[in-house]
Image (cartoon, rainbow, N blue to C red; front, side, top):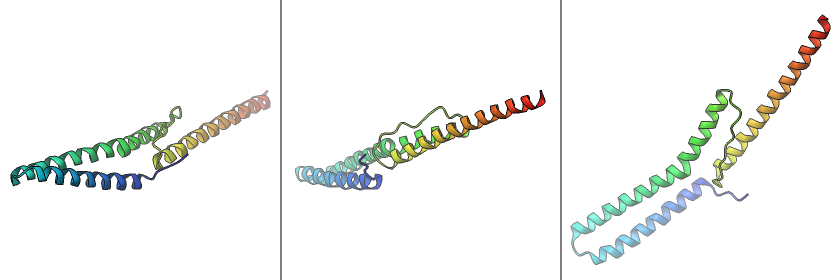
Length: 129
């Protein structure tokens, strides 16, 4: 599976969005003779840029953290029935895969302990009979 680092994605998106914002600002700024409207245009572009950055952080970072945290809380409450389904193609996918392996191992260990406890109970019952 091919992974792209979150850091790399953030840097590329910030760079490309700043370049696009500067090109648009420069192009439209040349069409607008009034300095007040140029400043207003720049403020609108900065607002749009901040909204795009906020959307990226919510979708690309906060949502995967929320999903991982939700499953971790369920594990802490002794619920091993859920697994993490992330396909972001970055470090969150690796973390989700490792947490799923941990959940599977915990299930296996619990099952082995239950089987050992059953065998012990049978042996104790046989010894008392």
